[in-house]
Length: 188
Ligand code: GRF
Image 1 (tube, protein in one colour):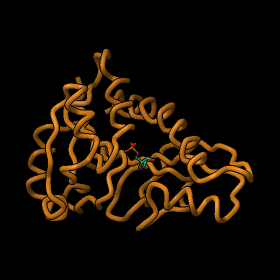
Image 2: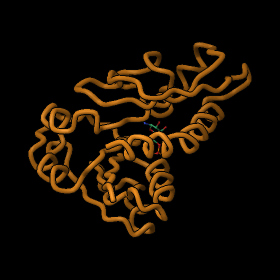
Image 3: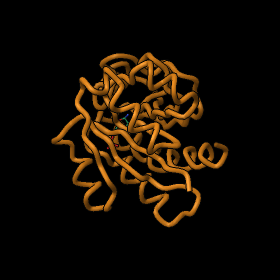
């Protein structure tokens, strides 16, 4: 049974979706949800889903040691799902091709520092893009720059608000992220 650890800083709807996807499977499960934000709604989701959760401070994620020791003990695969901090180089080095992030746009467009959540969808609408989508990629030391694993696009209509774009992107995330994770976890 492979142990998937999900890191989230906010709402955690992807974390919940992934946990539910693996709930009745025998190949892997979400064993922990980690966050840097004691007020993150993802903690309420973890409690309701009866999944263990742990809070590490921003400092601990930056320094890496406490988080690294924990992940070495507990994780086979690490998923970033709405996690807003950079992963320390020590952790990246310790888990080659085992840290995966989902970005709510078609990287390399609309990626990098500050490009998260509604900032991304606002920019897509402001630039009158005709499509957007999701990018699932391996994580390296820089935001949104690791090797791309999977992308899926969706059309953006001229009348779409950023909120409508966000909901279209979330639909792609919920449909594809667990399946991409399962493909990877089955080949660990
Ligand atoms: C998602 O749009 C994901 O692509 C991005 O952050 C958002 C997290 O949403 N990385 P949630 O916390 O999973 O609801």
